[in-house]
Every structure is written in C-alpha cells, then in structure tokens.
Length: 90
View 1 (cartoon, rainbow, N blue to C red):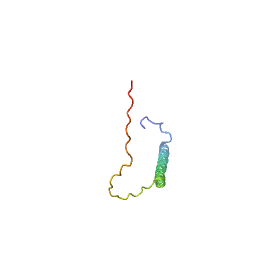
View 2: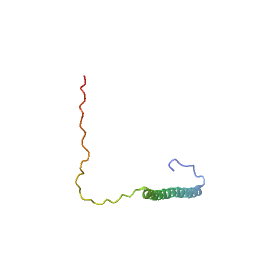
View 3: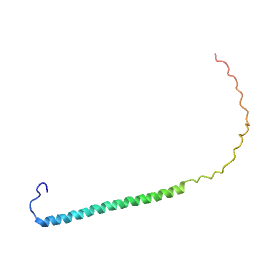
View 4: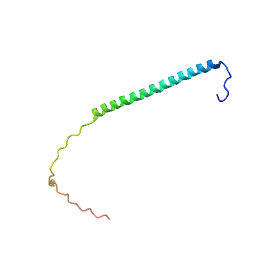
C-alpha cells in the first residue's frame, strides 16, 4: 500500500483472506451487472414484441388503388353569381 498500511497484523493470512474477499466482491459486482444486462435485454425484447402487436392491431391497411385512365374535367353545373353593386358611401 502506498500509505504504509496497518503494519504486519495477521501477516500472510490477512493478505490471503483479503484476496479471497476481493475476489468474492468482484464476483458479486459482476453478477449484479450481468443481472441488470439480462433484465435490460429482456425488456427490449418484450417491448419490441409489444410494439409489433400494437402496430399490427392499430394499423389501418391501405386500400389498393387501381390505376385509372385520365378523364375529361367535369362540366360546370352551376353558373357564377352576378355581382351586385354596392351603394356609394357618403
């Protein structure tokens, strides 16, 4: 240790057991990280399936459009209104 440590309390036994404890803590941290990763991937898979089901149920299928031949413009059935003059403003 860079600050000198606690002296030689326990000698090599302390060093051995602290190594075992560090390894166990590392395994515990790795297991927690792996569990979070698995839960996140599971969430993404379930959310993707749910989105696909939602889109499949709520999407209105587009009606097929048959090609049509161009037609002549429709004849005008109404006559334009005649404009009435306004009285002069004094």
